[in-house]
Length: 203
Image 1 (tube, one colour):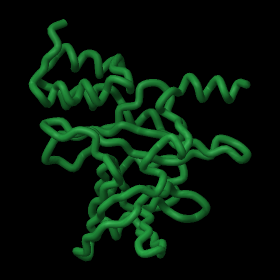
Image 2 (spheres, rainbow, N blue to C red):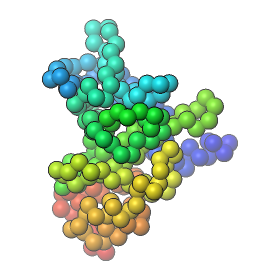
Image 3 (cartoon, rainbow, N blue to C red):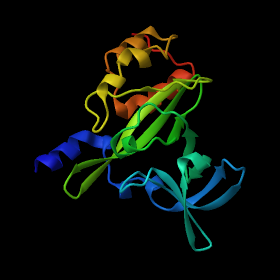
Image 4 (cartoon, rainbow, N blue to C red):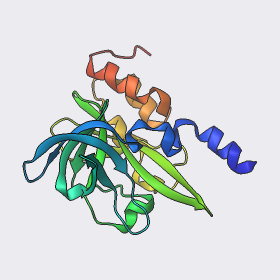
């Protein structure tokens, strides 16, 4: 019962694989680091059982797995992903591998927002998918994690709110909200989108 309560309070942070379209085969397209491009049924497979996070594709009835280092970018239905090298927030089962990371693109503009997905062993026969929002200034390669509250498998010391607040210099009111972790995960994407469109808080 306590575990069930935990899952309910975690909200969108923890969801089973079937609730996330990108974890199930769906039409997509891909670009590999060797220059190959194509279409296939694709899904994101998170690290587990000694294998790193991969893009998995099925084409002409044959399944093939691609390590993150082999992938430049791919799309599964409405979910767009890109490979990121030297990602400093590797967590959960990803922490066992020194691999590039596959991030989902949520917002682009002056401030870019991505979701980093990883898996955590929560106990016997139970694994949880975790979503960690990460942001960066457009044109840079340094990501900052936004993790108000507890995020399973993630070192909270790596996510001071002041770092994310600095990405929003044109809105001091918004900076204060980020610095105090007052922006909820549920509203994060909408807030970043509004800021990129020039909307500013007035209080």
